[in-house]
Image 1 (tube, rainbow, N blue to C red):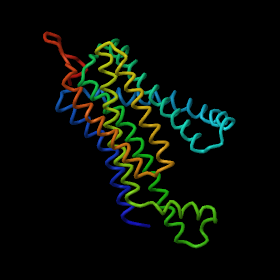
Image 2: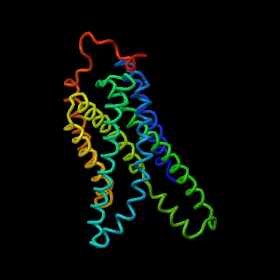
Image 3: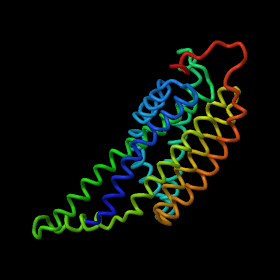
Image 4: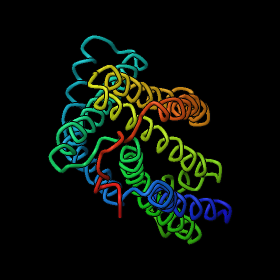
Length: 271
């Protein structure tokens, strides 16, 4: 067992859970936005996944078998599946966001503002990071158990021994790559949220389509690249998307005028 790996796990788990909450705290304090928007982003992300995840699991197998009737090239199969998974994620998440802003916010009297979008996006991307953090804690438990089991000869079967040996090959860098990915993903989720909010504010589908296409591209490339060129190179590609997303946030923010003169305060943006 490598103490540095354990330390990397603990650091990554702590930050993946803490950073979204600290981001929400910063937005709430600096921009005077209610935590309700953070919780709404969290809740609607989970609602979308309740439909999205089972549908993907149900259709991925039949799609793979259908593709195998046309080609046996593993890279072609991987590419089509990666594109399918990316498109599904883009459609469900971005259309889900659009419906919330277009209809739920209107019904609840919540304004479509850049501040509200920022907090909502922090909750949407933050809950994903928190979930990954908790799942990573299970991986840490498995890592510690594997190290303990392998230190006692004859305690595990040959199959389990092989699996545990693979688990113990994890390095601190492998774990920290996951943390970097979460930070980049949260930023991209906020960028996508601002795109969709801007689409609603300007009554145009252009930015909604941009969010769907951008989201689909990130997910598809991540799936394909991780299986073909490795995790470090994949994170490098995601980093390029992250930089573009960050640039979009800074570019669109001044254009998203949050309130018009003479309008009453937004009840969801105070408190």
